[in-house]
Image 1 (cartoon, rainbow, N blue to C red):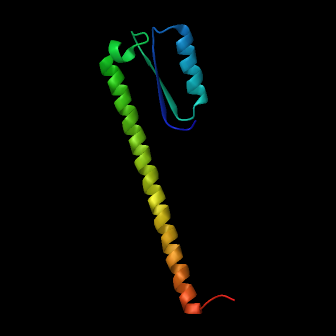
Image 2: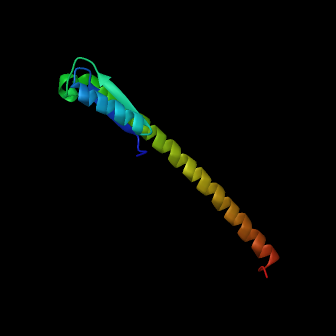
Image 3: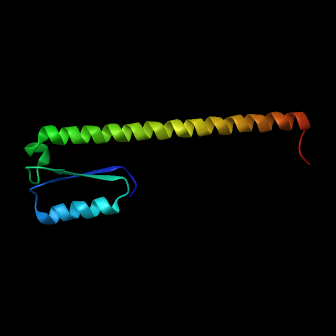
Length: 98
């Protein structure tokens, strides 16, 4: 999996869940692991402000990367379009290839 991924686990959560979160973090490219202090399994209820802050920061980062990548693709597409126009113009000047 290569999609940006946010893993959250409570600092007081069951050790197996913390180990699982760590293992997933190590195996998922572009994953971010957040260990929320003073909570167990329901971090969104036990630490709602921190939980929401982490999710919003993560989503802002994902949105920024998606916009950057989209701009790169558009720039690349524009460059390809420019090359296509140059080839078409050259072909019109020289005539069909034999």
